[in-house]
Image (cartoon, rainbow, N blue to C red; front, side):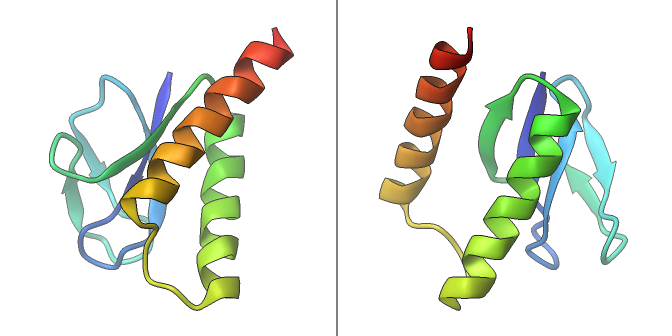
Length: 88
């Protein structure tokens, strides 16, 4: 299981193993405390995590926004859960 998180320094999306406590941001080099970083999704594999990171970055770039609102975060989690249920 992997968490899709966001670096508090440069606001870049990244992912970590769910039991990992620290992550070095690949963009700005900040040491991220995983327990304090905003978590967007909990996914099953690193390939899904990589895909979600790319999609979230692309969505924010295309819309010109800096972050998702709370409603969008909840909808994202619900859609991912629905996708996982349909996949199994």
